[in-house]
Length: 322
Image (cartoon, rainbow, N blue to C red; front, side, top):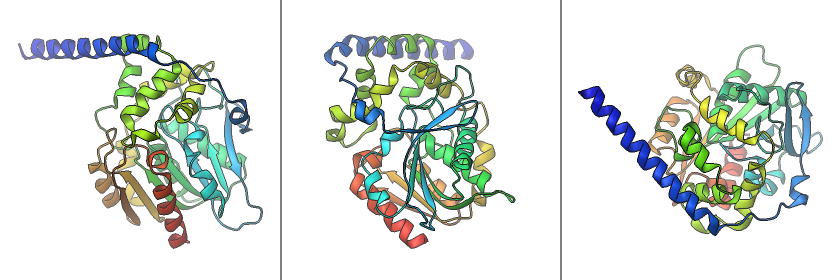
């Protein structure tokens, strides 16, 4: 009887889930796709890793002598996610903002190699291919989890590259109830309905629910996300990233957080509706040289919702850790 009851509960929940998506589909006619801005589409460089080509935006200061900041975006985003704080960071540091495997203008192999560990592998190979010998990793959401895995690899004895610091912005590392936009992609029926809507509607729908600062959900910001959604291979890459999130048990990296022996800044929007804010304190306690800053009245994407406050916190941290 208990098993039957649970099955009924799951069926009811799934029906409600699909009904909500159906309503979303009906409403999508309210939005039309904005034209692609060619200028922004052509600002990327490419590093060819053989099996995948990684796209990136870079601002390099020759003979700087300081660690290069490597920026890793979140789920469904691209290097454009850092648009608002890149100029400020580039005033004093070399910057490389990567498109993760399958995201942005990076190539999108039609395979299943989209777990966090495979994203981290591509990031590390890109760092080496670009000749970066000293880095500060900055990761948001999924990119935060990828940054943690990458950091643990860079800190292993014998690594040719040096990790000088780590900045985690609302990172995804602990197990939790999956965010709604990941659940949509993991459910075949929901996924079918989602992809009946326009790319612009999908982007706006997610940002409206992930952002606490609603006036930052501008047409320009929506288009920074939406313009990549219909590129060939993007759907498979995004769906596989959703499906492969827990193909490798995250506990293996959670158990090693105490080994991150570099200055670490944890930034978190205190109104994050996607990843529980309680994880912020948990992460700060697990990483020895870490400090936590909560950004008030901010949702899941501080660097887009509160760019000035986020930039100030990062610059202050870099100055102190140097």
